[in-house]
Length: 207
Image 1 (cartoon, rainbow, N blue to C red):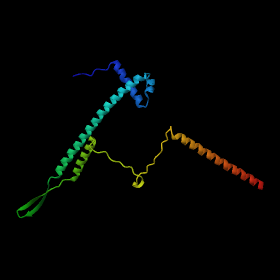
Image 2 (tube, rainbow, N blue to C red; image 1 turned 90 degrees about the horizontal axis):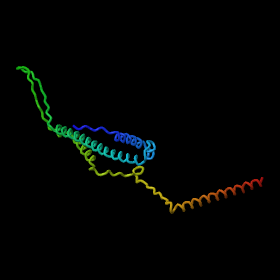
Image 3 (cartoon, helix red, strand yellow; image 1 turned 135 degrees about the vertical axis):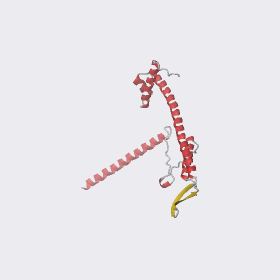
Image 4 (tube, rainbow, N blue to C red; image 1 turned 90 degrees about the vertical axis):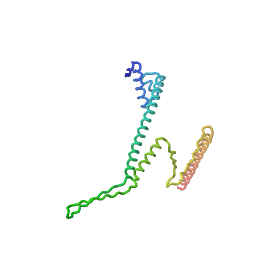
């Protein structure tokens, strides 16, 4: 039986360093910040992250396949139980009744049996159908669901088109229009102010 060889000091040091790099990376640190924190060059941190990403992808693939296999096995078990219960529910139901009669010869017991045919419990078929649906979804056999976006009350949604201003074209025109509007506003305020001043002088003259 082969025994796992212990890590040498160099590999152990690299493993410990990558563990620290992973913790800092998952905490949102950039490569430069990680390098500065643990006093390494950025190239070393980049190589460590590349190795970590490869390991994470491999582990995610293994975990996904394991989870998929477990779920499929669980569905298969439930489906077998449902099939067994379905066949059991189709068996004829036998009802036995007994009656005790007192006569001159003593006490007699009469037994009667009645057999009734059963059509089966359809609830087990629903379970089997659901198992098949779930298995098909896990295998990706279903067509993608179609989603429609509606407005209030189920009415068609209104789409508002927004013009995107390109910095090399209409932007100058927008700036010119803004300056023109501002100039008109200032002139309007000046006109209103001049009119108010004239009205005030007129009222003072009347006094």
